[in-house]
Image 1 (spheres, rainbow, N blue to C red):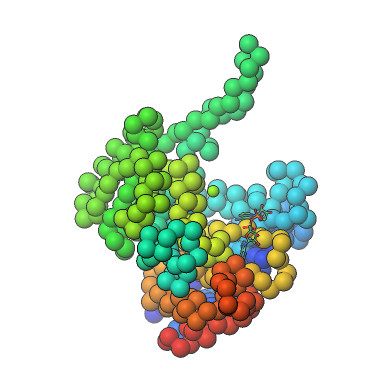
Image 2: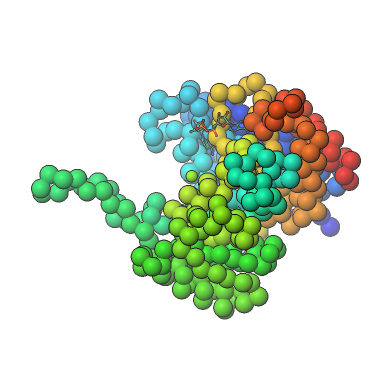
Length: 369
Ligand code: NAI
Ligand code: MG
């Protein structure tokens, strides 16, 4: 028996609706051609929600997100809402989703598709075949720790304070995501910290090791200092499979790894949270890029980051690995045939629109299945 997959789609602003439209066509394809029933609801987030409901994420939409098996989001923000005060801005919608769904593990793959090996600024022989996953802790650490603030000292200087805080349970829950992932991939985890200079980093290292010894002794674990990981990513990225790290180092290392692959238009992400009462897990899937106001409304955006985010949803929320593989193969096939949106175009190739890129991926899916 196939159970209904309940997906909430929040297209958002700028190119959000354009790239999400192509992902919806892929969902429809899976529903029809693979006979997996999807129940897709749509709602507003960001500027679109401000315009419709006067708030970047309405309570009713938040409730739909709580009930859904997974949320697919486009992008939020744009010049129209730039003048709003911080508390009312489009990004607040996204922050509310992350906070209330308790999405503590952010998964950012860095994958180099063979046809795009020349799009990287690194040498092809360094990035060929690259396929690694960074698991970043997303709801703790120095971005949230107390005390924080800027204070005035008696001598007239100002002092800025942020505090890195992690508890064992925060480390274990993100560690479990990384080890579970590793079991489905290369069975290898690298944990990045600064245990040499930070007590929170020493705790991180000890607890990740404890978790591995107690529950994941089949997975190979190595500890590295985060600065060494930054260097190794440029020197020998293929040595890594899953990298797990805290919020701050993960922010930086995931952007570094992402840029090795070429364009923002190619980069998907997943944010995973706690188990739900029915055994599923709260999850949000979204492209890494923003709303790209410079190209919005022109049918120019690359929809691949969003389509690959959908493929991550199939993999991590629904265990639909066959379909996820199909989507990734279809993307690779389309890229190999020289079909490119402007952001990944190479000399001598014709530029296709968002819609034509979607058409081509669907056509390739038809051929593959
Ligand atoms: P951006 O990611 O929207 O755009 C950066 C550059 O990359 C632009 O030149 C854009 O045209 C290009 N680009 C991005 N996605 C593309 C795609 N799929 N295909 C082809 N080209 C693509 O970042 P930017 O310009 O800094 O921010 C624009 C707006 O998006 C702002 O309002 C910002 O706050 C918001 N934003 C939202 C995010 C989200 O929803 N998660 C993340 C980042 C920014
Ligand atoms: Mg960043």
